[in-house]
Length: 80
Ligand code: SF4
Image 1 (cartoon, rainbow, N blue to C red):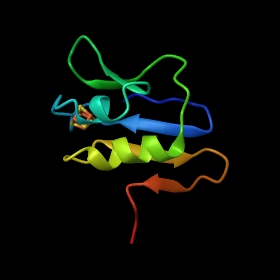
Image 2: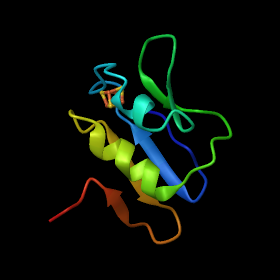
Image 3: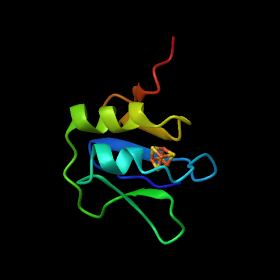
């Protein structure tokens, strides 16, 4: 698990991550791959919600969860 505790809590499920780099390619300012080739949030990354959600949505295996820390709302994945 990887989390950025600013306005948005970003959780990457390392067990699900298949190292495809889709999130990194979508938002290289936010995500990078670590030494185990799993996606992590960059230290000090400035988070822009629109691009963050684009990256989360690009993950084919649903490894990225985004939570608004002010409201507690899960912004991604969408819950019906
Ligand atoms: S898009 Fe998903 S599976 Fe691909 S590197 Fe990012 S978190 Fe991992």
